[in-house]
Image 1 (cartoon, helix red, strand yellow):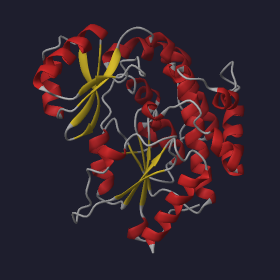
Image 2 (spheres, rainbow, N blue to C red):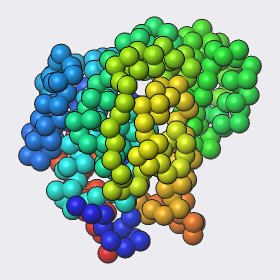
Image 3 (tube, one colour):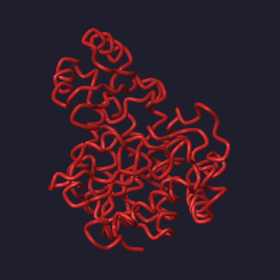
Image 4 (cartoon, rainbow, N blue to C red):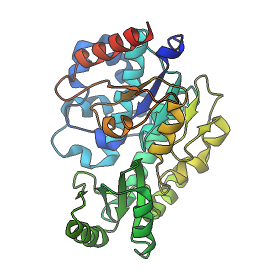
Length: 328
């Protein structure tokens, strides 16, 4: 499967991170789409070599709150995203570039051909199991502030707050200790700035508070087997294109503690792409992605693959139809 030809049909697959998790994700699509169902089953089989639970059964039986535990949520969202790659290919849709946000980078590297599926599952499992070391060390908050304002906050926090994700020009995710995030919320409330601690995400992901997770991860992974990319990938660690040599075990170790540069990676993709397709179980990145423009100033078409209201084939088919129409 190759990307749709022609500049009007260039599609960037933007793989969402943990914020897209929800109980019940993927279940309707497993019932309605045989290709997706077979792909999830294939992924789950590979995970069986590394995990003591079935990812396929986890998806089918998830209860409210299960995915607050990222050890469960990480493999689950990867399985859904891999299934979506296959289901989109069955509909004649493929990316011309891939971008992954946070945990979505594993699926982005798989879609690009850099990671073969067995190696991707080994890597995802090791990352998810290492996250057990992050329990209780901090959390994450969303704030409607610029990256520059966030840097000033970080500078005055004595290491207790760091920028986790640069979402857009006016929005960031901040990771930090519980006390520091609470205090910041009080300060920003006085200023009338939107701020919310993400109770559903009790980890300080993408900050140096996660250094212990990286240590545990390296105890399980001493190397990562990669292959040359068949589809270009833009890293949200660097904000630019990356090749197979760059996605070594050190890259994935730093992934836990390094700021995710969604804004910069999306800006890079917008130079060449005309469509941003958010590949994940529900829309999570649509608002920041819609802030970007092509070099000629035109808006990009930004689409989801699944939604909570359309968790089966309806939203997926609609996205595929709009991509084909856009390419005509």
